[in-house]
Length: 531
Image (cartoon, rainbow, N blue to C red; front, side, top):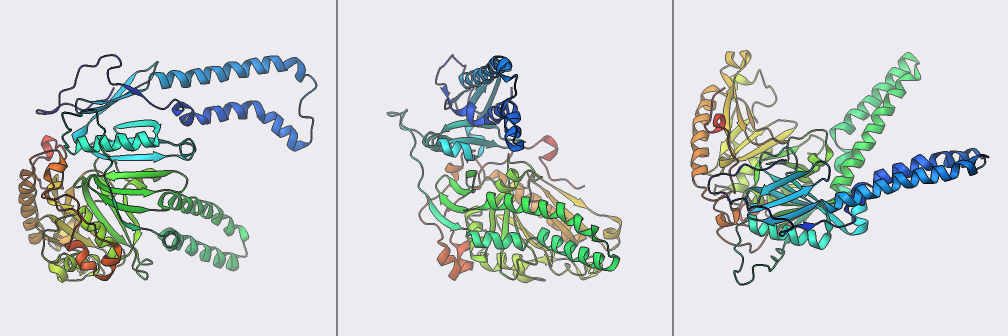
């Protein structure tokens, strides 16, 4: 059993009563989840028949008539046991939304209850695997802070029911007060305005120009040269696993990134993507902990960028393709689209010249945009990147840029800085340089200022600690809607952003006085520290 620990002032956990407000998932849910078990049963009993057909032998053996009743009985028992398990799993799986919590009970042999506080919900995803799409079903995933995996997974509901439940929970998580006269009236789904979409041709082009494609081509050229020099054709066999791995990676990225669209609504940023398995994410405003805009050398010709984010509850980026897709805010986009997404994430850039500062962070050198870079004495340690590695701060966020060839811009809102640490190795100590690390939630973004001057790093350490404390004091509620000054009026159209990319960040779609909730800190993390 897993549960959130109640905090002072948190909604009280209501005592459970049998079947009081509890609902069941769709009856087909166990079959959608367990179709592999049915397929395995069919494969086990039909494998011999299939092999005989391929070999041209009789479909049934001579003594099959004597064994047929036993085989049918055994198959029937296994099938009935599997179906009975599915029915029991469905019967004992219930969910409830009440008392400020969403709860899911499951299991008939090993009972489990998972629950999440509504005001701590970081994001809600609607996932539709291929088989679920055929039956018109969907799965809901609820993410909360500090959860290594989804805090609550509710599978499966009818698509309309899933959308309505998501709208209700987002409304409660946002602090929307229901009409006392109509407490059972469902919350309407918030309208949305599409901001951008990624065409399939650009997605395919970004995959072909990826780093892994470059190394596979480089390996192919090396294999040809070695084969010609040594007259040994065995070098070509080393390309087979690389080609298979590349094809699988291509397919996974294309399947996850196909039909990617981003929209803005009063309940947050909505992302939709997927070819076979579709997914719809909703990120409430201010829940993003850190953001990274990256550009590889091959993408620079076309002006393409990728945006990845850290979101509490999504976990660290690993080999799991699902985690990678869920932490991608924009798989591939041009500068105007990057500016549009930045305007949604950071509604208040904290500066009067956001276009100039963010453009300098993406492609600038030296002191462009007010960035403080690596001092000249550090050029021996970073001969290519010392003019680009640097930082600047606005009233609401810290910007860190790095990389001359592989460009990166990391944006961390001040209130998302959980702790700080100064790192200095022996060579850096010799040149009076230091690295400053900002600790946020786990994810693909690792905020780190590299090879800064020691005096500048110490000054930034103290100033950023003060800015983080001040930003956290400004937050007075866990309900993000209570921090929104003006409701959603207009979003930045891509066409307008294409003409004036600098204005896309200066005219955000949602005006906000804060940036959502601050993740709970351990005692060791409450104050910035030097390491």
